[in-house]
Image 1 (cartoon, one colour):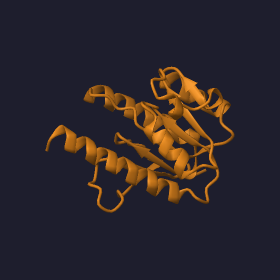
Image 2: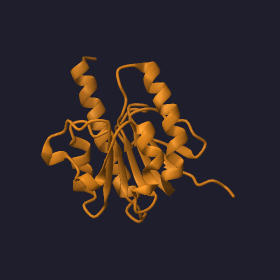
Image 3: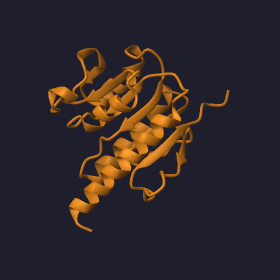
Image 4: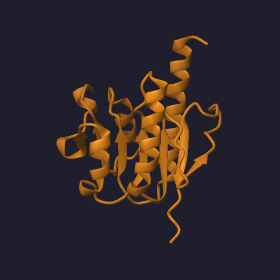
Length: 166
């Protein structure tokens, strides 16, 4: 498969997972977290899917088109390992949906960041929240969901947050 075909399949999987997640959280309160703004395409897609929701974006450095950049009150700049743990200070509540697209071309770096993220995310999530991610996340409170129809397993990842048992 060419790199172009692989890229197209990744974007198709990303869109299908985001569309699934938006429908799955329709009755669940809470904001959306976008981890990694990139060029702003998925942020813009989430705004179109869920116009009534607040979307908080975590990004190291903004390089997106101005039309696809959140306002200053919804943009948390800096290293995600510093900004995400303090997120509840800025959010109106726990998140109903998280989209994480922060992978790099470095497999070891991706694995380390995914392991950190799997530990950090559950504290920020509503029970039943959906996580859509470009990397596999392994945490006992994140239940792996099957991909939407037509999407190959492990092309993009879906999880539902299971709350801690008291």
